Amino acid sequence: MTTSIIVATGRNNAIGAGGDLAFHISADLRNFKTLTMGKPVIMGRKTFDSLPNGALPGRRNIVITRNPSFCAPSVETASSLNQALEMTVDAAEAMIIGGAQIYEQALPIADKLYITEIDADRPDADTFFPTIDPDGWNCEAQQWLTDEKSGIRYRFVCLSRK
Ligand SMILES: NC(=O)c1ccc[n+]([C@@H]2O[C@H](COP(=O)([O-])OP(=O)(O)OC[C@H]3O[C@@H](n4cnc5c(N)ncnc54)[C@H](OP(=O)(O)O)[C@@H]3O)[C@@H](O)[C@H]2O)c1
Image (tube, rainbow, N blue to C red; front, side):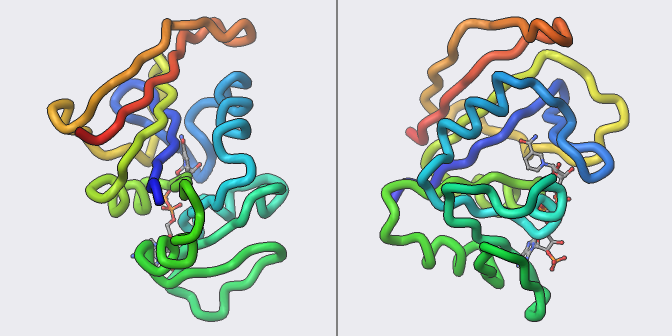
């Protein structure tokens, strides 16, 4: 099984603010849907709480929590990242979708990182992606594009562990 992380990062690796995504770029949200559809998605409880409509449809949703009474419709729970990964061992690819606490634990063991690099500041950001060691990864970066609505530049980057 391939263990993959998918994330959208702004300048300074900002990913979240006030419990919400730091940036809303529609092409990024479409890319997220394309890359995760049909695959198990693994997330921290706070990221689950931030989803506007609960569990993501068309995907097996696994929420990591220390709360044994946590329960939500169409969601399975795991008490650790390791347990979540064991639950998805039969899948070709498991997608770790955040947030910062879960990325921190998953980065040392991930095989692949799908990163949307967003060339913008979010000064009130309160959650950040951990620092990536550039020497440890092969990098394929697409060209920079511009979000029509916001004028913000972004690009899709895929890193595979060397
Ligand atoms: N830009 C992006 O691509 C992106 C993607 C995802 C999320 N985000 C943003 O990131 C923010 C949320 O990130 P976050 O770091 O605050 O929270 P998080 O990682 O989503 O969830 C943290 C929670 O996960 C559970 N958890 C963490 N480690 C655990 C462990 N080892 N064992 C068992 N449970 C564990 C705990 O849940 P309990 O408290 O229930 O025990 C903890 O409170 C939001 O602002 C969200 O919008 C951004």
